[in-house]
Image (cartoon, rainbow, N blue to C red; front, side, top):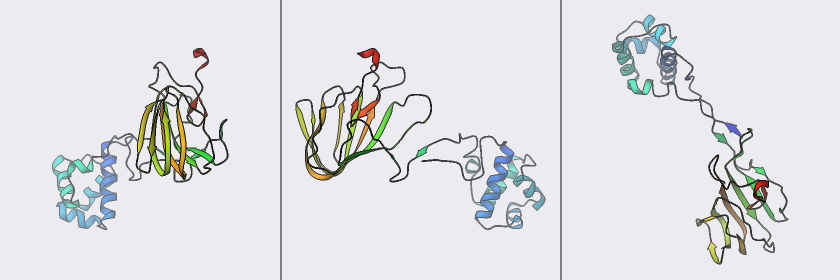
Length: 225
């Protein structure tokens, strides 16, 4: 897992002059232009352009407009990433999801957690990549609070929700409430792979699901027993 970071040398912690200077220098170098090239196009001195790139001056709007035109960009483009939060998107590369081994996991049946929060706050959704390779595996019925979403990637599966069964093939999806008994009814064509995304509910809400104890299975909080 990696966390996305800015790579353009700009940051919301920089002053506007510093951000602008970083942008002008990076863009100029990307275009393989010299200070002389840009200063000549903009009609300003190389010294002034150097000060702008080093964040050592607060250039006038007129000067900035000339520099923008010399670079072939707009003023809004030059400031488009200023004061934007760094962010912290979680990237899980292919094959690097956590293989979850919990009570109920059996031979020929694995699932990988594709997003996980290592912080102290509870996580309110979990996406899994489910893989089933043993056609003889039998699943019990599962019940948990919240909403579950399935998306088929490979194979063919009959999935039961309550009294109804649904045939799922690649590209099919199924959304349902977890309180109703549900689970694989018949493994038609293995190997089977599908995404299972469980939404526990919003923070502070009622009916929040407990921790996962098996494929699609949740244990209610102690207070619910």
